[in-house]
Image (cartoon, rainbow, N blue to C red; front, side):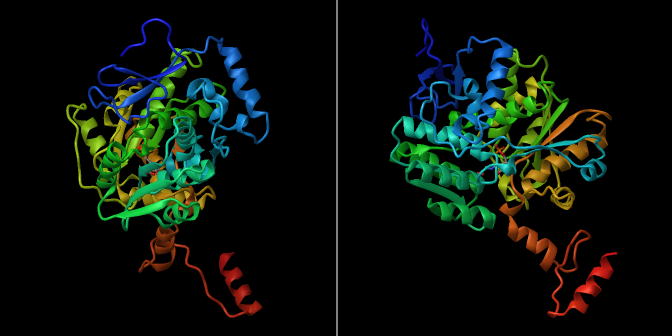
Length: 431
Ligand code: F0G
């Protein structure tokens, strides 16, 4: 189908064959060719200044839904939504720490900290839209496969909406904070004996055969919400784009969302140039980086392994959409080792900012690109921190308490008798 005459405000289009579906169609993929779907909006018919004013005015409305860091950009997200399922979310800070400048070798490195979202990761931006859509189409249950953050977020938003949620996670490879969240918010949690890629295959089959509404990032409504990371960042920079945006990459939904946001911001006149995008993978889970090195001649699948369990993914679902982001922004894809990730995480944590391991891949990647000269001296760089430091306490305790011998940055706790002299002794050792 194709909407020839009067276009609705929003519709879905297949990225592969161009087939068009209404915005209320619940199918996860194109019914004609099986391709991924994308949301398209009619331009809002407002001038740049008017649009920008709306975004900031809504933020001024305090802590309500209208002020949400997702829904205040509603013209870009889902203009027709009336009743939204919002925590609210977004409105995350753009941080600067001199200690991280020194560590990374990048002066003025900014950190867009998505760990400040309600469930502690950027996933809430997509999930508020995904669950809003689930309610609009009358879904009887929602489901996702996850490395942990998507499931935590889905569990929270589904609970708010009163819809049963099913989450599939790889047994033994989910950080404890994330697993605890899914359980706490009441999602039915399945520990699948396999990896994330197995979970995703299984949940897609369940979506097709069992009629549950799929809320992985292949769901195009999730992508619409995640775009607001970039819109909000651009707004914080006075709509003067940085030279680089660096982000961690796993299933590649976020890399796709970032590119779509930049494409639309350019088309709708909000910015006059696009930053270069750097997608950073863990070396043990880097099929996209490998494909980039071959000029995207082919797609790779790997058996993934990394300490950054959030991005432990071997066959990313949004590969094609992410290739478009890298091509359109003259971007790069690189892999960093687990050691580089842990070193970056220690630097981010020690600065007082803190983030989960996968998030630190962006800072590790930024440093590596500056070292190689790809990021030029003086470039304005924003690294996205995707998740909160408390997401993975198990890894932190292993690093700081258990590992023997202690790694260089380990901060061992000290057990003492309940005696002031012992406190004094420790205090002296700090001076
Ligand atoms: N950072 C964190 C903290 C994540 O949880 C994820 C993905 C990414 C980065 C990568 O984003 O997949 O869009 O390329 N987590 C998914 C999940 C897979 O299930 O929570 P991506």
